[in-house]
Length: 77
Picture (cartoon, rainbow, N blue to C red):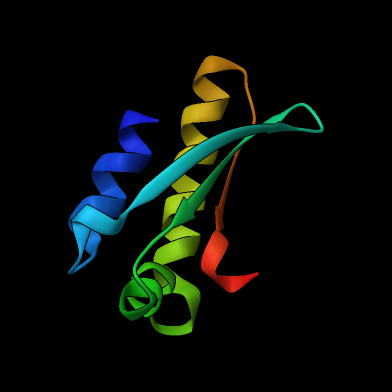
């Protein structure tokens, strides 16, 4: 969770509005991230590049520790 927090807080203009919740879903630990509405685009990135990169990083960490991790943006739902 510290890694997700570090990445997210450093990507946004309103770090004080970042909220991260860890949920267990289908054997996967999912990090549900909520940010200021103006920062959603920064988390997603152009063509989804940023969110894909974060998910890829979490996948690599998961392989190392034999766990599955997910990353979702609450504002999108």
